Amino acid sequence: MDVNNLTVKILIAYHKPAPLIKSDIFVPIHVGRSVAKEASKDGVISDEDLKWLKDNMIRDDTGNNISYLNRSFCELTAIYWAWKNYDKLENPDYIGLCHYRRFFSILWI
Image 1 (tube, helix red, strand yellow):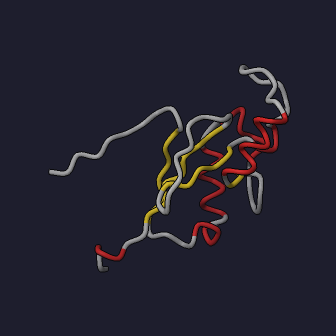
Image 2: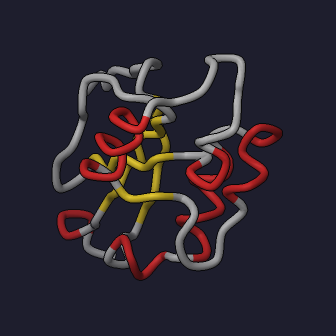
Image 3: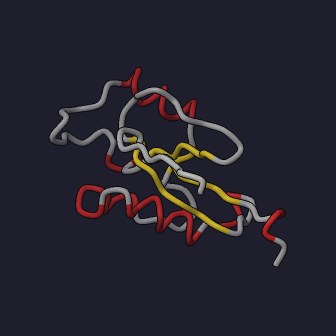
C-alpha cells in the first residue's frame, strides 16, 4: 500500500446551521435529516435553516440509512450512512467523523 496515495474523507456531522467546514477531505453531513422537522431538545428547525443544511451538505437519509434513529444514535447515523453508501464518498481508504462543535487537532511528531 502506497501511503502517499491514500484517500481520506472525514464526515462533519451537523444537525443545525453552524460555520461550514467543507473541503476535498472534510464532508459535511446533515444527521437526522428524516426527523429534522420533529421537535427536539433544540426545538423545531426552521424552513430557512433546513434549506441551508440541504444546500450545503449531504444527508444521512439517502440510500441505505438509519436516519430515523438519529435521536437515539446521534452521529452514528452518519457512520452507518458512510458504511452503506461508501461509493457516494468516492470509496476512500479511510473514513473519519467529527462533530461540527467538537474540533480536534493533529500534532505531527
